[in-house]
Picture (tube, rainbow, N blue to C red):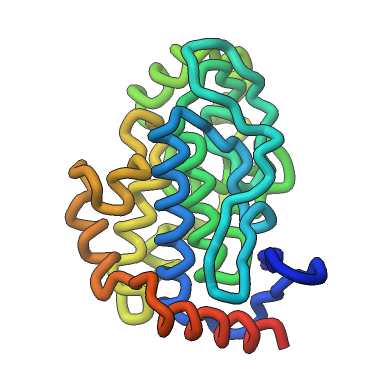
Length: 244
């Protein structure tokens, strides 16, 4: 995966070596804090992905490329936004009245990619992307289907279980075993829910508000990264090592 460096000559930092869980948390904290601010201001980014994150040499992460961003209002909007592998299920199904929850799905996919160094859901088209989601979190419950239909979802009728191609399940617990990624599976599960209204919010993800995933959030942020000079230097050293 690649994250662009924000200062000096345009470059990209290629993550090739084993990631350090602490460094990923440091970057994830900044990403989610940035989203919390945007959502609090009523702005949906609509294209959160590693390529739209900038890093300076102080280890500061910045959310970039607001060309698709919109202020949230109860109005129809196009669903053909964001890169396929980071796109929330309601957008894949053509929802026109979506919420800030789409950014949270994309943020979860981005954090997972930082940890895995590969796409979490590497779909090769709309139906295959839905297949990937089902293999990860199972079929959508009835309440999710009804909620998405209520978002002016024009394409949902085209998606039927008969089109889903069977494959090997890859649950979060298998991708993020406790021995290596303590608390990660439970934390990320709160980002990947079919029902948009039950998806974790940015404020909940950084512990500013309580919610159903509060216990998982608290566990994942144990030894929460701090914005101090040592953390910044550690992150930059890690990024430079990864880029070699």
